[in-house]
Image (cartoon, rainbow, N blue to C red; front, side, top):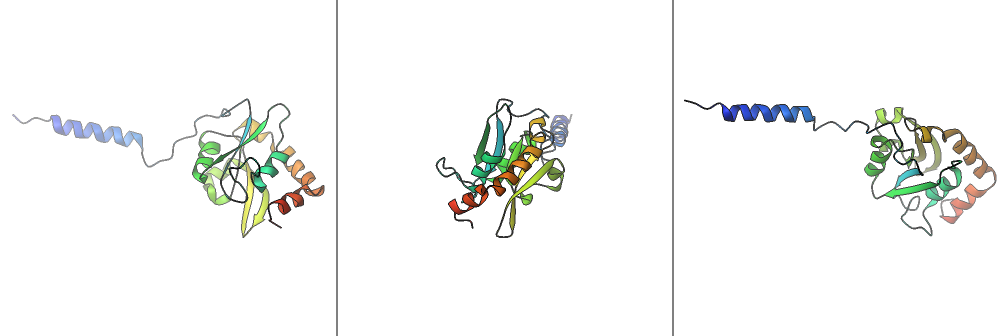
Length: 167
């Protein structure tokens, strides 16, 4: 008598693996903010624009700290070593905001993001992206845009550029 057990096991394993869909990116975790006690803006290291140094965190970090303001929550910039971790934090975990470039996101990702250009340098436009699926992030777009205009008008934008040698 021939056993059909090995064939049955192989078929069962194939069904399990097919159900996992290992090649696809994970779905968004939830539409709830990652942290409701603080507004986190995610970024990745891109010296001299973003660095892991509290004394001189980089032009974009200082600019974002000056323009992103929530009436009740503190704003923190969390810096990852690579862009993919920043992307995961804002897209998969439905974070409030991130600093980056369009190339850091897929076309599908960009549909859920509203961006404000912060700096054009070496043919790249660094932007602040707000996740429209996150109510905190979506609610900060207008005030942040106004604050950026104010910072540019009062000369603080130029002073920050000079501080980091970006003029």
